[in-house]
Length: 203
Image 1 (cartoon, helix red, strand yellow):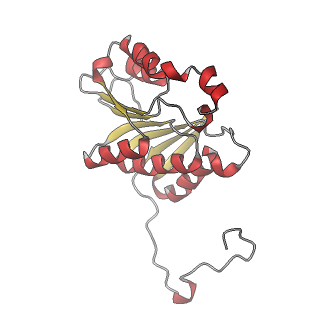
Image 2: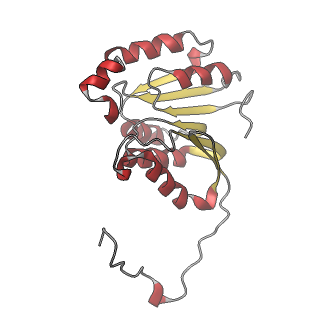
Image 3: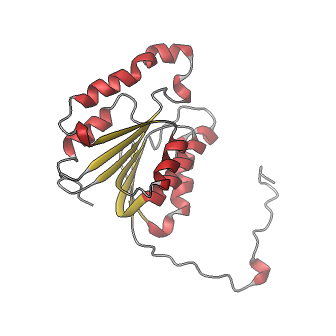
């Protein structure tokens, strides 16, 4: 989906100090009716909570840096900032019946949070719209269950009937397409349930 010059409603989930926000405002907001919504707590993610990291990233001034950066953009008047957790803000947008053409997901890097953001954002993404997952292969935690990669793969598997994907160096780009795999009812009642996996850690 070509993005430049089109009327776009953009959602960014996680902006930190606004590097991607300013790029989108400067490059994708030319159309008079385009809008951009940003969600961020400006408190950082789990990886920023340790004292040494809070100091390293100067977390106490994060929001002021973000606002100073976006203020320099020509189309800052098209920007709506929702200072909130993504789980709360996304549900509020759903209640507003919001829809988007481009979604950039880069908030919490904890897998369960990434999965939540992906599912709720997908419900608001228009057909032929694009959703981008940043840090697709980021591995900030030794335990795979915490890293975004497992959440994104799980989401892609569930959304397989209506996606086209393209991986770049650090991102996964997902285009929403009309459903191409209709659900087929299982004709055999004897096969209605998965067999127990004796080797599964979940059993």
